[in-house]
Structures are given as structure tokens and as C-alpha cells.
Length: 150
Image (cartoon, rainbow, N blue to C red; front, side):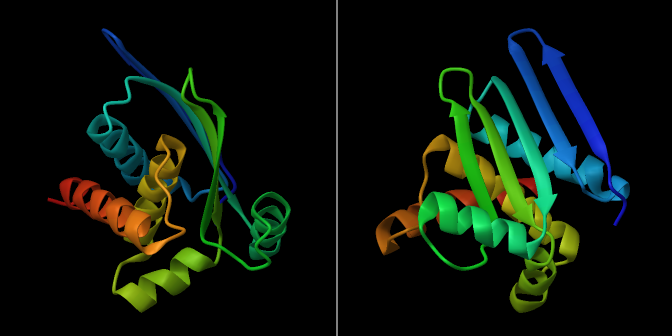
């Protein structure tokens, strides 16, 4: 995987978004950006600053333990930095998307898109910690994912 920091700024009339990808394969960036744009449009987020960073399983496990008090690897973890400005940092495990893709019958790229959407929904306040909220979040996530690939 090629280490890459890429910044994408999109401005048109009242919409200004800045999405940064760190540690992702350069070839995947257009699709990943589309996934982020689709989720932001679907959620009616007109202005934001979000960074996506690919990190190791060990790093994401440490973050999960420190900030959520859950001692296990997760596939994505999101931190809302500013609700008013819709700024956030989203970390994605470097190994989990490959495992999840096989498990759920997706390509690696599709699974990364799914996690990008998932991370943005977490910033929006959606949770998946109980059955009711998980159902609501995954329903929304699946709808956005289908829009991306239809």
C-alpha cells in the first residue's frame, strides 16, 4: 500500500468540503472520495472538514481501548472534533477491510467505501452499540452504499 496524504477541497456555491485521506492506495482515492461525497450529500452536510487515516490493527485497538474502553480491534473509529463546523477524524484499520470484504462478499474497495460511510454516520451521531440504533444506522448506511454503486 502506498503511503499518501491527499487533500480534496470541493467548493460550489454554499457547499465547501475538505476531505483528507492518509495512508490509502492512490488508485482507490477517486472511489473513496465519491463514497465520502455521497454520504455527505445524503446527510445534507454542506460544509465539513474530515480526515480519514489508515492505521494498523494494534493502533486502532489501543484507540478503542483508550477512548471507548473496549479492548478489541475495530474496523473504524470516529471522533467528532467540532459539531458546529462538522470537523472530524476517522481512523480505519488497515487489515479489517480485507477480512470484512471476504466475509461479506465485497471487494476490498467496496468495503473501504462502506467504512467511510460508516465513519461519517458516526460523526453525524449514529451509533451501533445496541440493536435498535444499529438497525437504524445500518439501514441508512446500506441506502447510501446502494446509491454509490447504482
